[in-house]
Image (cartoon, rainbow, N blue to C red; front, side, top):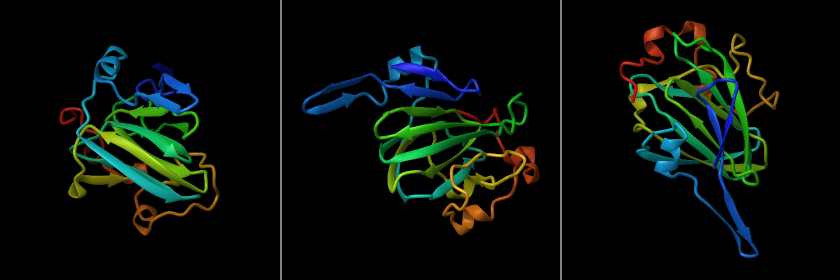
Length: 187
């Protein structure tokens, strides 16, 4: 397993070791001891899977009082995956990083608690799976408008397919700090 740094120190791209032969391939997508030794000591409590068609944009989502670290991967297709720092006291608050995740590169991205997450589908369709460090709670949802001009994410499509709910999310500057990341309550 190789860890690839991003422009925001805590968000990491993970390149797993792939064992390939004529039959196909095998890889480990999570190994607690290896993750701990790489400085990613999270225990995950929930697995999620989504299927989306080309140009679908999901996000930017987070949980308010039960923030989730996530380990994201693509099992078919390809996506442009984004993490936005929503930790009010962070020197990188409001900045974003992205990772290109595909079924072929088999990379994963580790997004710690304190980040909003979203992605855009680049292929005809994509199956995305991710682990979360806390349980999903509909009443604890938060979100940021995907097109927030102050964040300035360079999405790979000009006309994404966005849910009505995601299209009505506030911009980051309209969200009070207490409705963002609270490290006292973080895992």
